[in-house]
Image (cartoon, rainbow, N blue to C red; front, side, top):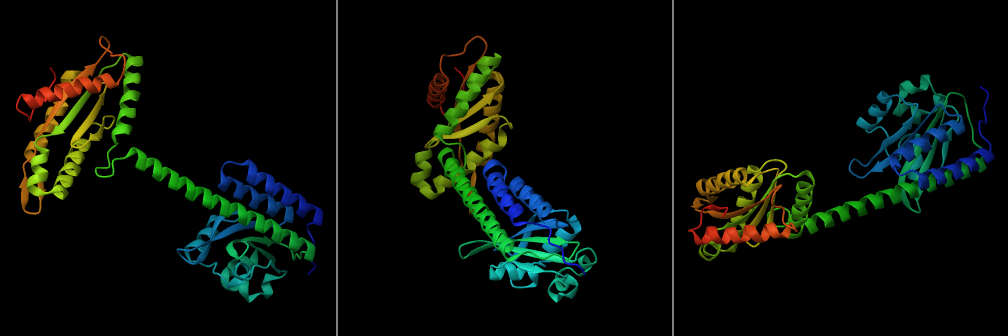
Length: 352
């Protein structure tokens, strides 16, 4: 069978330059990998190409990008963990860090053991390792319909290309981890650690957003301040751990009882702020009184004890005829109404 050289040193250099530009240019890194695999496959004159990365979970190589491979082939190799470090041509290239080419896979037991039915369509195979210094990242695989051999120079240039792709993959992984950490920090900055509700700062942001939206749309907005009655007595009698459980239980009840577009946040201590968009004071009172009655009837069960708990609420409304200048004014008014509810005997809702 005739051996074919399908690429020149110049095309490999141009390919390397293009890979550099694509990785820097595209925002979607997975789209970048798909493009790199496709272009590299075409430039080499290969029939198909794939990029596999090492999975620490399975300790095998998993294909994450491919060109001109059937989904059945990819799923079979991934689902059955057929690409293993040190085994087969791809696995050996990954483990040794060397470009490995097999001009005639029909004479290679390595390829036959991985995907025997593919031998009917392919003649040659090329595997390019992806690594950063001593860290192994993955491997690029190319199959050829005709018997194909690379020159030593082109093997070297392809290995450089593989290293560059590996650096880009590693950088993408680090960037993704950094983004996840930043998102977690942002969540911590907005979320109350005990109840999981929006914290004081976040619920104020939500209130301002809903206040501005209501004013733009000339809509109603009801705001309620809720306080646990005699919470200090609960802490003194049952201890602070039980007090924390009471806070979590009541937070869960309020979050479950409000509508999907309503929001409740922990305002501080045993106080909660509830924001009810598109709600007038009458509907707001009905919602808060329903929550109050549920808390009173359910109580908080801890072990074999059922601790009786009640809440008081103060409500106020902003509407087409009475928007205050600032959203924070609604909180002050609701807080005054809460004080009135406490003064009136607790376990009630007060609108003034």
